[in-house]
Image 1: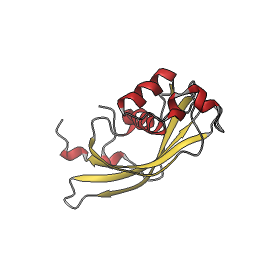
Image 2: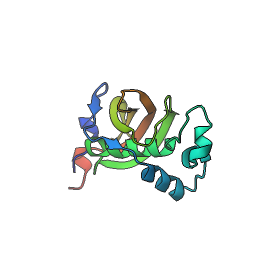
Image 3: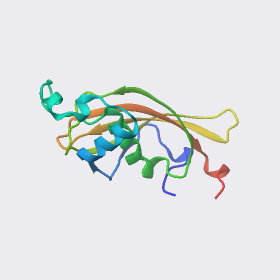
Image 4: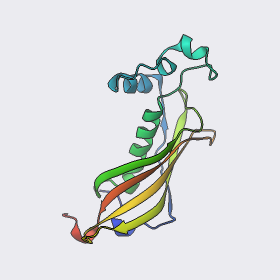
Length: 152
């Protein structure tokens, strides 16, 4: 287990996640297939060529999901009770096949639950491509275990 317990999160701390991921055409196709999203902007080369982007875009929900996965080892791996919400999701720049993304999480809030046995932590997650363009950002709120109440 490598995640942080509630008391280990520090408001204002930014975690630069080491893992990066290059997104392939196959990744995007599989995600669209699994979620039944047949948007031609993601899947149809000829259609996408006629848009302002000139090529297919990676599904924004895939980008967000991948970003959450990248954050898990340094934030909530084995120390989370549940994800509570994803808020303020934005995709300010597109992601294309072949882009490599990196992620950072900044702890913006934490508070104990009413029973004092767990805590709620909010992180602002930012996703950047290989050119350091911000391609996705959102707030992730989790219900986190406290070390003294965790069953090891």
